[in-house]
Length: 408
Image (cartoon, rainbow, N blue to C red; front, side, top):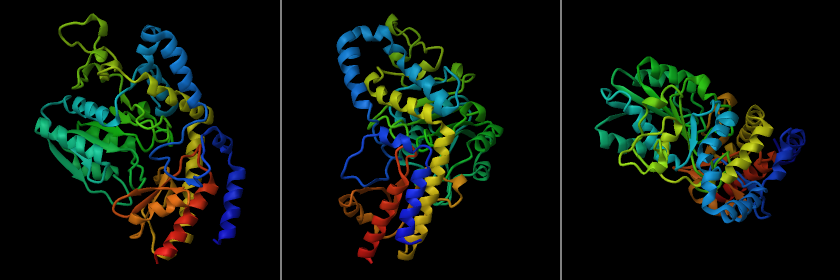
């Protein structure tokens, strides 16, 4: 593929893109030619600054403390239900918004392993995101549990066979990511959940690199618990609150470890002893960030309009085009695709490895190209389907090619 044919291909794909109309709804800046890090932090929607200003002026500034009685108390569950309906495949009353992903993962894991205290092992992926591994290391130290790590291929992911070989009668929980943060490999949630359940174990899923980009069917897949962030493909902004899902029939048995007043059955009773809320609200602890939920509400409306299946189809086209460009433009310089080649097994980012990449980000940033770097030598091209164009993908890969020529 020559540079000219690549340009023609990108333009043709953009012209034919049924979701192309959504790109104009996001904030853009002139000095960024290719934003390829939407899998770390999504662009803000153009309507979000006005929503935040309106909230500060009319809801917070106008209603003051009365806002809690006029809807704020229910906001974590209300936004949670919208997340469930639009992107999680979850019925109402099973998703709540609040805290960070790390804290909610801790709560979910502690609740999962407490379901059967006689079981003393937790299965995880050795290559999972550091927070997931660190949280599990902390829980294991607190409770005297043993961690059983699965070594999955670096350019692949965990499959049901890996899990079947790792679980047993001592397994309390299996904790895995739907999409691997480095390789973008997709794990079969339904199949792995079934394997874990057959061994008598609970399962906790981290959806951070899939929610908003891939169809998710938590209720249909029989998932026990799941968490995820809202600042990647959900475009909630830096530090946006995370979410937690708990299957409806499990909720009465789940006890989370950070017992705060907002998760109590009667928050304003100011009682002497903690009694958890009967529903999903029991996973709240302190006062949730109502302000930080506002951008997420905007993005959920856009995703609902576009449709998750259409978003996934666009994601597949974007990553397939990126792989074509990597093969044609970067492989001759020694770069190696570190993501699955099968589009059905790949999330919405593409990772490429090369020894020169650890020092390349400053030069790419000067060119207005913003990918992501993951050690030891991987560039992640994060392709957010509603805001990323095919032309951006091409411009980004061409800039990487040019920098590899300089480094040669």
